[in-house]
Length: 106
Length: 106
DNA sequence: TTGACATATAGACATATGTATATATGTTTA
DNA sequence: TAAACATATATACATATGTCTATATGTCAA
Image (cartoon, rainbow over the protein chains, first blue to last red):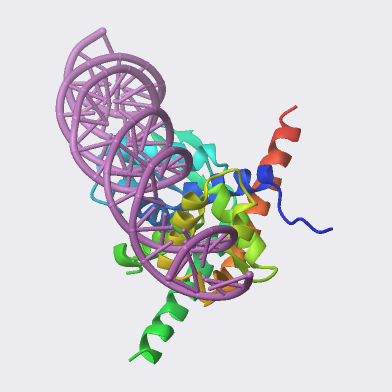
């Protein structure tokens, strides 16, 4: 009998997806996909305070998506797992098929 | 100048990722990837009440991930956008690379 | 048409999340 | 070493989320 994914696997996967599931964090990962950034660089992506950016980075680090290193005054953040960009990418498919459904419904 | 993803794109993508980002919903999507299911079938995946399952399905429907049709007493749910399974799949890569990091840290 | 079954809705509630302000810590440079 | 800059931590708070129980609605079958 094939029972599919188990509860622990689902929990682990959901935890990673949760780390992605915020507009600001999506923007941060997108930026990091094009190069490493310090906190201040990332801050310019969204209209939120510096502690809020730090907080979002904390979540990404805990999920294993981002690593950091200090370089002088700055703390540089790096995309630890570029494979996660596929998850970002594949949301596009959902948006497009939703669009298609809307058009055909006219 | 290349500015990457914009705020609206990020919001739309995050909304879809948010719909995925719960253990029960991950289990439901995994089950639906192997065939259509009614609410009661899906209920057996997790130890939660029927209204809670209905609530999770509502979120998946709003995100455009799932569609439904009535068949007699049952309401059958269908994976509208199988491409979203790639997002589930790619979390595996993150988990594995986290595992690898832990081992090398010993 | 009544009873049984399947699903949806309403309402309540505890916890999680995202945000800000104020402040502390760490690092460089004058 | 003092000032300036970059980041982190503490705290508070409003809103979102996940869950339940109770109840309503929809559908079939006797």
